[in-house]
Image (tube, rainbow, N blue to C red; front, top):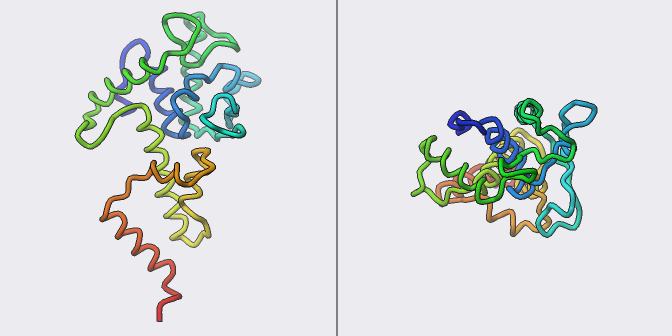
Length: 200
């Protein structure tokens, strides 16, 4: 999907895609990011501080680590803002062409829809929208946590996902992980293998 972005706002849209996909940020959290949030001492930060006011029903803010490819995309977007005369510490990272505000949720949704179609994502497999980035992130964190558990780490994959998403309640986290019958059977076999010590 990353390479399906084209046009004048290719860098902006690729940056938004990577930021949401690799961090699990909600779309409104991502759109509220300003240059000052991601740039310190002329360097892209390695950890993004998401403030309480930008988070849905959150009691406190959270810190989100930015993977290398996301930091590189942020740097390209910052360079684009600078080259086009929009660079300012108070500027939104995902500046709208309509003025000094971020792109709106509807515009982000439209961008996602257009690139999903170009990338060949099928609508019949489920609803396609910006929240897919967060759900994909949750699924990837869950699968990575299961692998770590299989390798011997003592952890709870569901709690790892909840922590990564900023959830206090696991019931909210469960909604992010589509588990069908075949997947449930695979997970059961993983649990049987991990806990084989308890078999007679």
